[in-house]
Amino acid sequence: MVKKLLGIFAIIGFFAACSNEVNQTNNNLEEEVEKEILENDKNQSNLKDDVVELDETSMEIHTGSTETISRKIEGQDQEINVINYHITPYRIAYQLDEVFGVPEVVNNQINYTSQNSGYKITLEIIEHTNLEKAVLNLQERFEREGYEESFEDGYELRSTPVEENGLTGKTQLYGDHPMKGFVAYEIDEHALVVTFQYQVEGADAMNPLLEDLRKSIHMQ
Image 1 (cartoon, rainbow, N blue to C red):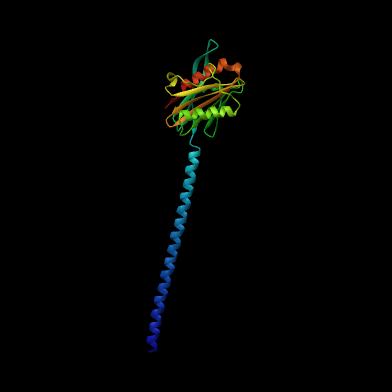
Image 2: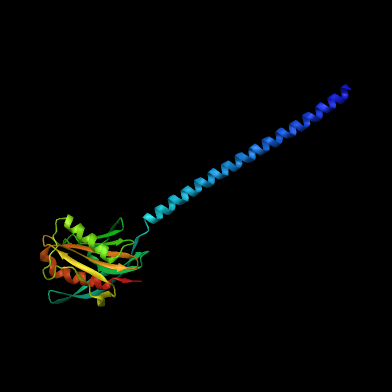
């Protein structure tokens, strides 16, 4: 009888040990699953951060070849070296004088400054906006800077010639200390804005420069 009881206890102990082992195995599996879920969540979070970072730095300016063009300044033809630029991912290309040197790119703005002449030109991409809204924002910006809108000949808001580059655009000139103004084009679902600044005495050279810049802007 004692032997039978011992045998029964042994069997019970065996099954209990097996049960404990199964429970331990299940616990280990649960821990592994939880660990994997946490790791996946972490990876997804890092992936989202990378996407945001890429979106914030999506605009790039690529410098291309240098060309020599002829430009009429104060009635005289002059040879000017210009550099070809390409803005990605917006597929916008343009040319600007070599004298401006390397541009500074900050917050979707490409800034050019000529130290010798005091010329300043900025190209800016305003995403998901139309031409009318872009122009209104520019006018408000200039007013905040202390410039008043003028309706004198040459200063009023007017359309840019479509034959210049095939794009629909608006331009306006402000003030004379210094001269400031803008050109805005509607490109796909965005707006390309060019703002410029120069001293009055530099107008004879700046005006043909801006004309060549406008003519060079195109989609690739």
